[in-house]
Structures are given as structure tokens and as C-alpha cells.
Length: 415
Image (cartoon, rainbow, N blue to C red; front, side):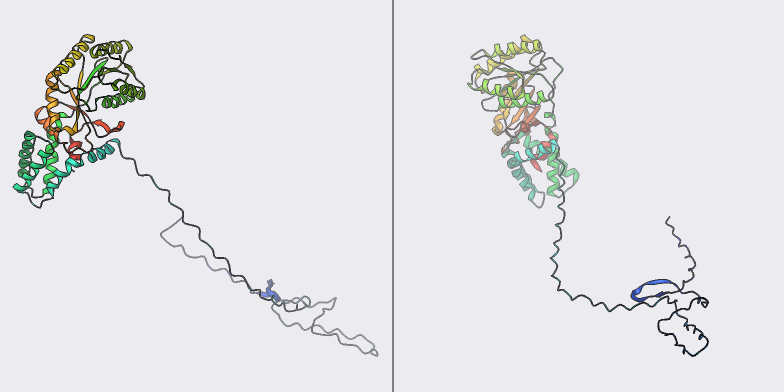
């Protein structure tokens, strides 16, 4: 056991007698006391020859005892000295082959933790809003906070289609925050603008509720080319992945490929679809709601034909579809969703106002925000017609449709 104190060493053992070495380095036992003189047989010594006795002598000469010097060890017998062994002729050794060091072990690359779904979404949203946010963020490259900075910021917000009312509101709120904080750093002002924009957009942040009614009936409307059918397909896939039974109604009977396009999304999500070739849109919606109730569907989504809000007769048709759905199920439709193209800027605000007055919108889906320079339109909607934004889209892929977060949108726009 390890100790912080050193133990005293044991006393040295008595030294043994040095061993005697024989030729070639052999070792024998230690030398001992001389053996007694032999009495019976005479010992023969290698270097001493026997003395010859004359024949005339009557008695035998006494045997001369060998004189043994006190050697370190007794010599038992003469040991022939072997001839010197000559070392074999040196053979030139071949130079050893160079030893190649093994390559260092290649470290196994440790995969970086995959970003979370919201982090990946933030990156895509930031990339989509780069054109809008770039012009606004460039304002804060100034070295001081003065009237010129506020004028450039006002111009950038108007160019991003934030609208006059929202722009004025943001500037007033920002000036108040700067005055309270007594800051002189333009970068700190940008952080305050993010907080102000997030607070302005917060009324639009609301989740789509499913499950209170069985089935939950949704009616999707919008202008031509806004991305209604594609948004319905993505929403259907997300609902199906959440173990919701979805039934689609192909009520867009005007566009030739609308029914086929919706059918493709139904096949991908493995859900049922109700459609009629050349049928009445209201009748298709009515049949779909009844079928959803009979089959135990959780959600029924009715796709409608695209139309401009200025086309009054088509707007009246939408009102008819809504009334027929109400007859099929009391209280339905529970959600009236408007799909808005984010590239349309202030025109999107006009669409929200027109469809809201005609149908009473419950939520928005803002699409095509990737690459737009008019992402500030959400600030205008929040200030003038705050209809909740359920989803925002930045591309054609399934994961490019995500729920709306006011804080995330403000950061992606201005950071």
C-alpha cells in the first residue's frame, strides 16, 4: 500500500563468498576450507610427476604428498585447455530494410449533433428572407444614431412592404426603446428593432387547433397561383403523420389539373379524396363533409378554385360553398384559411381584407417567402388586419412549411 512515509531499508545480508571462476566463465560453489590429507589413495597432481625409485632399494619410497597451495577452489582433475575458438569470419551484413512506421490511426470522425428541426427551419427561413432583411440590416452599419439612421430605416421598411402604418409604429416604438436604454450603439438598436417587430407580430402567432370538432372542417381559399393545392398537400401530410384521418374534397372543378394534383398528394399521404369531374363545387364539399362524418374522419379539407377578390360572382360562389358546408355539419367550416403569396407585398394585405370581409377568415398560410424582398408585409397585416398566421412556407419541399413564430420571423429577418 502506498504510504507518504518511506520505510527503513532491511539490514544488508552477509556477503557470500565470491565464487571461483572456472575457464570460460563457469561458476562453481564458493571455496571452503582445505580438505584433509588423503590416507588411502594418493592424489595425482597435474604439474608434479612421480619420483622414480631405484631397483636396488629394499623398501618402497614414500609417496610424496602433493603440495597444494591454498587455491580459491580445489582442483579435482586437470582440465584440458580447449584451443582458442576463432570467431567466424565476419560476413558483411546486408543493410536492414528500412522500417516503415505504420500510418497513424485515422481518427474516426465524430458526427456533429444534427441540428434540431427548429434550428434547421430557422436557417431556411433566414435564407429565404435574406433579400428583405439585407436592406434593413445594412442601415445599422452606421457609426452613430441620428436622424439619418431613422430616415434610412424608414425607407428600408417601406421598400420591404411593411406599410406606412406599421413602419411609423415601429419607428416610434424603436425611438422610445433607444431613449429608455440611452444607448449609442447602432447594433444595439438593431436588437431593439427585433424586439419591437416580434412584439408587433405576436398577435399573429396562433396554432391550428384540431380535435375539438369531429370532423374538423377546413375550407381553403386564395387567388390563382398562390399555392393552395400544394399547401393543402403539405398540411395533409403533416396531419397524417400525426395519426389524423384526413379526407380531401376536390372542390376546385374549374382548373383542369387541380383534381389530379390533389389526387397525387392524397396518394402520397395515403388519405381518401372525394372528387367529381365537372361537378358543382358546393356539391362536392357537401358530399365530402357527409362522407367524413360517416367514415369517422378527423379532418376534412376542401380545396376551392383560385379567384381574385375583385371577381364578385366568384366571391359569391365561395359564400355559397360555405353555406352548404354549414348545412352538412352545424358550425362548419371550423377553419377558413387564406393562402397568400408572400411575393405580392401590399397586394397580400388587400387580399386578406377582401376575403376576410366575404368569408370571415380564421387563419393565413403565407407561402413563397424564399427569395422575396417583400417579407415585411406581415408587419402590415399585423398592424391593419391581424388575422392569425398558422403556417409560413419557404419552398416546395414538405419540410418547407412550418408553424409561424413571431420571434423567429423577426430574428430571421434582421439578424
